[in-house]
Length: 462
Image (cartoon, rainbow, N blue to C red; front, side, top):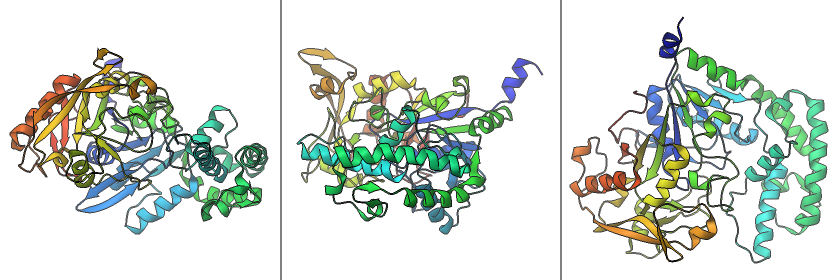
């Protein structure tokens, strides 16, 4: 077979990433695009992610399992770049099975995933408590052990999914890890003095995580997960060569990326499109289209700079409108999201580091009823005008946004499926977003429902 005919028979692959601070509505778009895909892949993060899907009015929240699981017959993969809590994975599986969704025969978990264990969550919580005690600003983690699990990975001491298949090896490595982490917990983080929630307290005695409790639970979980453990890299490459379309689902958002986000107010993994390759074991030449998901305004959970933030807690203000109409509560934590105007300069940074092919604008309908809108096109930073988000959190915190004011609309955009049916000022707003960011809008979401989507260019088409 010639090279050209071989390439023609291979599938087309799309990467979906958030372009802001997460919570952009990636879950709905992944679910919607899965109609054209045969496989969906998570490639980073852990159960600190939260993807909400609304299908026929029924809401489903996912944290680890790819959103494609809601489409019968689609294979779902958890790649090596994900840090995995096996307990949380099975909580999610059982919940989906109760709703009538077949999961276990369609889910493949990379043997290279680092495991999140109870001491990771304990360290996460204790560190945030120590920051508060010292009078410092918290990072705003979810307290689920994501960061400490990635630390073990980078330090080359992590227990991984493959270790669950070898009980003696698992036990030896677990004892070594507990010796280290219990020392940190007890000596430096004063764990014996903290009030632990019952989930962590169940593993702890005198401020230390107990070996038997962790080991016994892990061995029980090992028997459950073994049928789903796979060489995900090999399976993805084989599926691609066989002509399958693959969808790579990012978690969090670009500005939470460990390298390119508002450091240190970031997550512990690379959220950008390029990590789809490293986090799943495929070559970068297999990533054909990068879809950036962005809200029609901005939100952020947790600490860190936010140049266009509004006073979103005062009734009658635009920020309050976004917060309440948009139901801006974190899927994973339940925390209120900070709200602000759309930031085109921020999106330029996201477009640059992701190599975005096109945009999907979500939650346009939330802006219905606002008399005017503001769009940030750049900043004043230390007396200089710049048109792209700076790289450092300290600089970003000093940025004063430069706004354009655009007319709002009173007509409803909810449920529209054709661009020309949108309110005229909504169309003008979207047109201006394209102009200021330099990235074409290919999809618009007009409600959380799967079918309320305007398609201008399909990512799976050439």
